[in-house]
Amino acid sequence: MQELVKMVKSMMGGGTAAIIFVSTSYVLDKIMNAKLSSAVALLVGAICNFYMQQRVFLNTSKADMNFGRRYICLEIIILGCCLFGVNMLLDRKKEIQSAVTMNTETLEKFDKYYNTMVRIIVAMIVFVVISFPVRRYWVFTSK
Image (cartoon, rainbow, N blue to C red):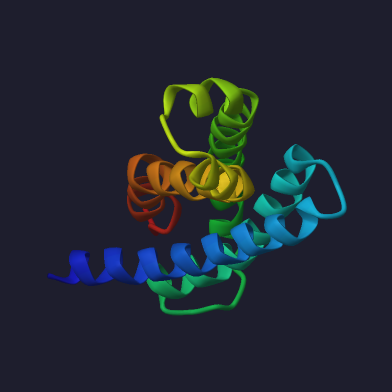
């Protein structure tokens, strides 16, 4: 039961970091390239997420560099996977649009929110497959 509680709290922290990531990148999209805004927003979200995840797993938000080193290593992998997934789907936008049959009005809405939808989907997949398990069993352990 405690593992489930930790997972839910970690999801809430990750969800908050994802909201920070998506909203920051959405705003930055208006002033810079989508790929660059994704990279900047991922870094901002990662910094916020470190404190939230440390709070979940260690019940403290005081920065501890023993965990920070592992967190940074994992975060490089997570950010790399997210950036790779987002960039891959951004590059294949036209292919994905042509594969999905939509009327013109729906296609315009799809086009407007495509970058945001891609970021959310990729972040969710990376959280389930990489982020939570590795944070739980490697980053925030005292072993």
